[in-house]
Image 1 (spheres, rainbow, N blue to C red):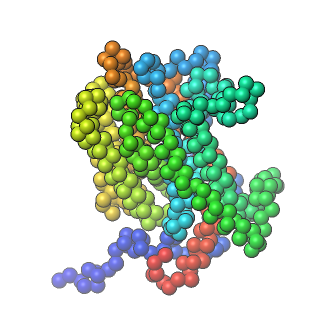
Image 2: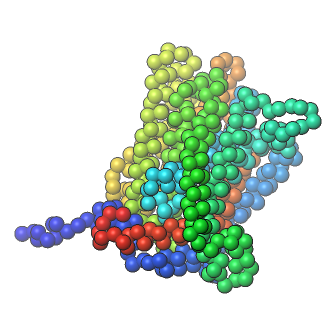
Length: 467
């Protein structure tokens, strides 16, 4: 006979998903000690040194590729006629998409008072800044004469010329620069109280001076906290429309063209959903190893993994709906060019890219329907990596697949990336990871003051109450 007590025992996973956001046994001081120790500990972990050596090698490879590019020109890439947009624009759109999760987690979830964002918002904000920095490189490099990039800005020159405001390149310049500026301000304002904590705890005089300057005289007074909260809410309100506007403008780069596969009104919402989808996948790709290496399972709990898995599932379904709508409209419109474009994606020379997109962006996220998968860090990491690959393939499919098969067969051509395309892409990945590793060792990757507020709030609630 079964034991009734055993049958009615609570599910530990269910308790983790409905209980406190932070692990048990933490108080105001212990939270500060654990997070600040990651930065102030003088012993650098061996895995960090090894990782930095690898990523910095990739940065050197990027510098070699850029030096050769500036010397010879964009002819070293695989671009041609008709595929004038190759890896550079594919990587630009991919990196911009990665940068969306940080603003979503920080701004929108802050306005919605979602407390589960607390453990991951600082990390996601830093990821946003580094991804936008990588994204901003590629349109400038693609200009051919990158030293003249300032022509995109409406500065008062002597020839009384203004930028061509009907050019999508100018739209990207304003959208990305605005997004980067607001994201940087939002990230820095949130850092100020934690910089003061590091200033007070640091034993190194040089570090104490640097953190003191960056904390701008923060003393934790009521006036300081009032102004900090006000500035955070104002910046969150400014950043929220940017989540929608930035990738909408990037999608209009394609929608305003007449190329089959581009001229579509579904692109703006489809691109925005895809950016959030990809951004959360990258957050998980980076947060899961950091969570394990720094033993932060009590801060980045199964509840965080579950919530991010749900967001990925929801946005993944929107992306899947976009794929189906695009295919349906190509058939329903009776446009021979759109129909051929769809068939060419499925069975043409780049068919492997199309089916890779389907496998990574539609099939892989379906496993997230299971709660056991959503709380399994290893499974989530594999799915997130698949989504990152799938979203890059999607950008390749849209850009290269459409340009290689234009209206006239006489203008068709194939695109093959050269080693310099690959060096530039992997070098940008190395730049992103190098900046991230430097951030982990120099600044708190989890917001100290927000975690302390969370501990105080949960301590004041009844035992077992929902956070």
